[in-house]
Image 1 (cartoon, helix red, strand yellow):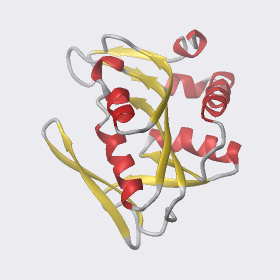
Image 2: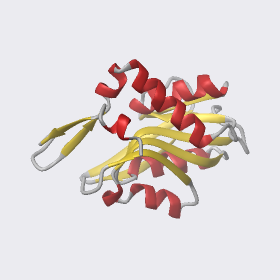
Image 3: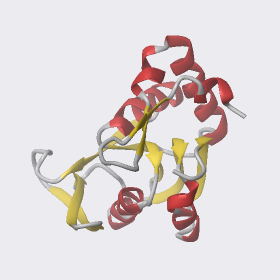
Image 4: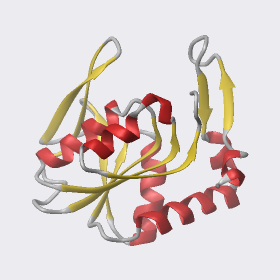
Length: 176
C-alpha cells in the first residue's frame, strides 16, 4: 500500500552515519501530485475529530500545516527550546547521548482540546512521546498521531500506542 508514495521517498545510505539509511522526504515534497496525495491520504486516515494539529519541528510543520488548512483547524508549533517568544511550557526528553527539550506557547492549547500530533517520520518515538507529554501537560487530549514514514523496528509507533495514542502511518520501512 502507498507504493506510489514510497517511490517518491529517497533512501540515502550511510547518512548521517555509516549503517544508517536516511529516508528523505524532500523528493516527495518536490513532486506536487505526490505531496497532494500524501496530504489526501493522511487527511482521510485521521478524519476531523480534533480541534488542533500540533506539528513537530521542523518537517512536521509542513505536513501539519497542510492538514490544518485542509481541516480548517489551528496549528500548534512544537518547537525546540528557546525558539518561541513569550511564555512557554516545555518537556525534556532523553536522546541517545544527552537530553533535548520541546516547547509550545503556554496559551496554545486550551484545556480539553483534542489534538492531532503530526510529523514526517516516527522512529524511536522520543520526540513524538515528548510532544504527547507536552500537549497533555497543557491539559490537551492527544487523540491521534500521524506520520508519513514509520520505522517499525525502532518501536516508536508501538510506544505511542502503549501511551494510548492512535497512530497512523503511510509508508513503513522494516529493518531501518
